[in-house]
Image (cartoon, rainbow, N blue to C red; front, side, top):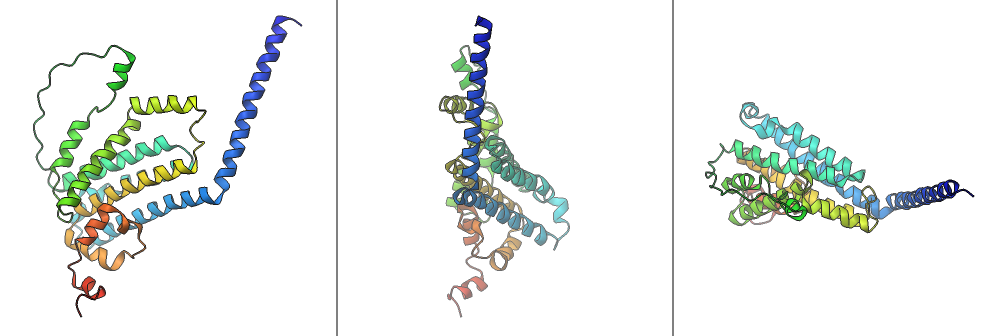
Length: 286
C-alpha cells in the first residue's frame, strides 16, 4: 500500500472516530434534556421570567393613572429593551448559549441602574481622578490581565450616587454590592477577558464544550438570572412613584410571586408593612 493511501485511511479513521464521539455526546445530552430534572431546571427559568414580566407590566399599568409619567420616566419608556433582554436571555439559556445570555443580563443590569439614576435626576458624580500613564503590557499574561476592569470605575460612581426611598440603609448597601458584583461578573463575557478565555481553555482541556450544559450549569445560571432580575425590579420600583408602588404590593403580588422571596424586592415589600390593610391581614390591628 502506498504511503498516500495509508495516510488517507488513517485520516478517514480519525474523522469517523470524531464524528462517532460527537454523535455519542449529542445523544447523551439529548437524553439529559428530556429528563425530568433538566426540565425542572428550565421551568425555574420560565418562572423567573414570567414573574419579572408581571412586575414590570404592573408598574406600567399603574403609570396609566398619571399619563405624564410616560414623558418623565425613562424607566417606563425603555421597557421594551428590558423585555427583549429578559426574553433573549431565557431563550439562549434554553439553547445552551450561556455566555450570550450573560451579555443580555449585563445589559439589563446596566440599563436598569442607569435609568434609575436618570429618573432620580442624575445625582452628581465625583470628578475623574488623575491617573499616571500606565506602562503598556508586553507579555500575553500582562495583556490578558489588562482586559479586566475597563470602564468599571464610572459605573461604580453611578451606583454609589443612587438614593433610595424604599430600601433601608442595609438593603441599599446590599443593592450597591450586588450591582457592582453582577456588573463585574457579567462584564467578563461582554468584553473579552482573562476569566472567560482561561475558563474556556480549561473546559476544552476537560472535553467540555458549550451547548452541552449540565443540570448544574442550568441551575447556576438560573441563580444568576434571579439576582439580575431582583436587582432590575428593585431599580424599576425605586424609579417609579413610591406611593403607587405601595398600592401595587399589597393587592397585586400574591405570596407565590417568586420575587417576594428575593433580597431586594423583599426589602421594598417590607417597606410597606406599615400599611393598614397589611396590618389587618397580619392581625396587628382589628
